[in-house]
Amino acid sequence: MQIMSDSDKDAFDSSPLYTRQVQENQQRLAFDLQTGYDYVICGAGTAGSVLAARLAANPEVKVLLLEAGGTDDSELVMDPNRWVLTLGGNLDWGFQAEANPHLNGRAIPYSMGKVLGGGSSINVSTWSRGHQDDWNFYAAEAGDSAWGYDAVLDLYRHRIEDWAGTPSDYRGTGGSVYVQPAADPHPFSIALLEGAESIGLPRFEDQNGRLMEAEQGCAFVDETVRNGRRQSIFRSYVYPLMSQPNLTVLTQAMVTRIRFQGSRATGVEFRWQGKLLCVNASIEVVLALGAIQTPKLLMQSGIGDPDQLRSFGIEIQQALPGVGRNLHDHVAFGCIWEASTEPLPTAPRSQTVCFWKTNATLTSPNFYTYAAGIPFTTPENAAWIAPPEKVWSLIVGMSPVSRGAIRLTGSNADDPVRIDANYLADPRDLTELKTGIEQARALGNSAPLRRYTTREVHPGTLSSSNREQFLRNGLVTFWHQSCTAKMGRDELSVVDHRLKVYGIDGLRVADASVLPRVTRGNTMAPCVVIGERAAAILQEEHGHMTASTV
Image (cartoon, rainbow, N blue to C red; front, side, top):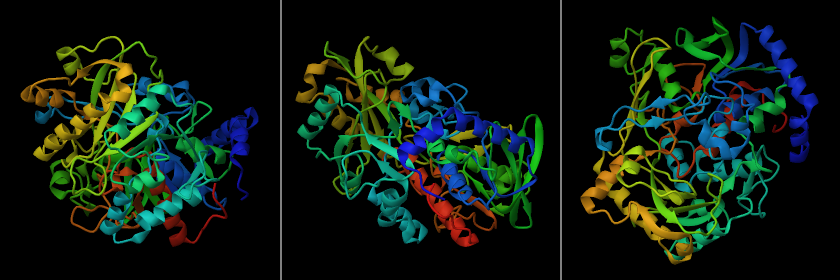
């Protein structure tokens, strides 16, 4: 298969003729739905999209891609500045974590993408590769250097990225994912980076590359946006292949159960157009449903902690107590300043990122922050100290020590899960959060930003005890849910270094669930790596290597 140039692919994907070809082909494939495929991939989010496209690039391989959500053909998706409007809507699973005593009893929303492209279709489009310490940690946990930083860097450079910025030995061109530096940096964004440098954060040429090998630093963000339009992972990988007869993509297809024959996964049950259907996978089933739905499906199919499964009358297929455990993502908190009369960026996305550490022994950052001209706060804190009309925020993220869990409430697919995010359960997190917020305050109050500021609003000059309550009232998720079916070799590991579910043949997991810990920064780019690794593993094991990249 010949590799298309990026400009050719753009014209190809957006042409009315190709759009019609896709619609007509997918209608035919859905009308003539088969009872079996080579691969059944559950979930068309970031990793699932990559995997489906890489496998379907071989015209001899039949792939069925099942997505519980709907189409991404919406301005809410295509315009990256409308991401805020997707939260709580029909593109969002609309999960909610349980009431948390460490957050003053608050039950926080826990959004995840429910649409073709998953999170890559509703996120802020920031491309953050993950720190070298993250990838080397994964390699050590898995016992496989293919997950290490050097190997992953090669993947980014030679297969994944189509970098539109200044050429660099760290960046790749000709890959499937268009990545650009923040477009037309606003004077506020320039001042913010100058402020970061003034408090000791070194400036780097871009968000990835050398910054992801450093202990801390700042840069303009990298983003998956081109000419103001979102380049989701689904659109980057899957859509260019949807006129092919070997790739069937079904939306509104809710997977309800994995089917087994002995210790082998043979297919899945799913609901589609009001019917419960069964489909077989002659080679493998791959779960790419995300860190909440993947463990739920595993458990309701009999793979998980035996005590929990028995309590709901679920027959045990494989005892794996780590399923649903180890849940975490980045916690988020907003620091707010009243804005001066100087113009601010109007887009609700940051053009900059700053990383720092709060402990001298760390070799990588445990905090980061983005900036936006919006009041990033909670109803509780807004009621305590009301933000003025014109503000800007530093949205601070922290890598936590605390771990939560996904648990069942019943054996049926419609039974909701219990999401115990467990934020701040480990007292070390609150201690680090207090220190990290002080660094963010120093940045926001730095001299280069003073012309954009009249005063600090949140958290301001609260007393120590009030500030602690303010933090507990203001903490939310950064929507980077991960690690609930982790890769590793200990008793809580769910998949091995080749993403195979322990004790089950023909079943893999390929999404953020497999991460042993959340990466430094946003998780979209690491999920692309997971999809690429899954595809390479399956192609190697089953002998159907594709002729080229998509």
